[in-house]
Length: 330
Image (cartoon, rainbow, N blue to C red; front, side):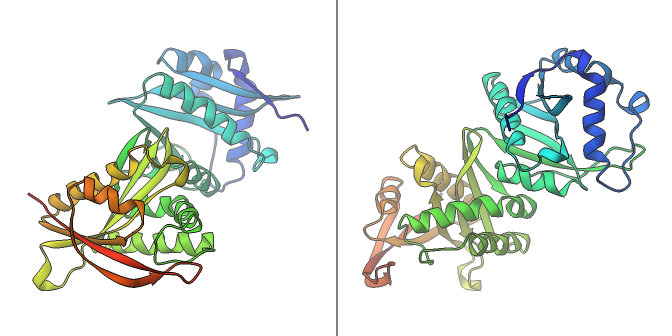
């Protein structure tokens, strides 16, 4: 089957777009559609987005639109991704990814520093898609006060940069973070895991991390490059009562294809800033003596405290020494 062509939308697409949206909405209970009362812009949607400095795209099928997406500038360097719909018969075929690629590229070419979108709380399939595309939950649930009593989750991601994740964002990111962890373990990174690490087990690790964020025991920082989540690191805050001034940096990971681009340095710096903001004045960590992390921490001013030979073994059963580092925070 030939993939549908993606083209700029026109105002004449209105009837087809209304039918497409209803084909998606009608799969969920409690959703009603009154275009003239609540969404009159659908009659001339291309002009609606163009007037805001944005754009609409259509995936053209034999009998009309089978997919759509739009993007428009928002506030403070953000661009909003809007109206993401794919005909149910084509779900899982990659069309949603193609549409999102087009919209994100347009937004980034327009200077987007951050990408945001909203999704009805009932659209669980869409949530999984956005999370696969490195979006994370952010902010409060939005109440629309419409005839469908709609509530919406906010999703967001920086184009380039690192940010602290709360429990909702960390839960949303758990699958992608698990993929990065499993890939790093397979590539030989000195983690507490040995390859092969099953994706479900890796994702479960980050779901546990999310629960620890919720209880105030841990901080999690994630990093993006070109709108793709590519790295993370954690701070263990759950110290004994005589060490509440200390935190332990753990699990600093960068997806192998994006290493040596400054992402690891950005993650460590952000974790240090978050530690200081949490009132911690001393950080500690350990890393394998022959790992790239050793040179990174030395460059960033960490001090070696000592090493233990044969501390951990790799997948081949070879024992490696581990280095312990510390850093005082101003």
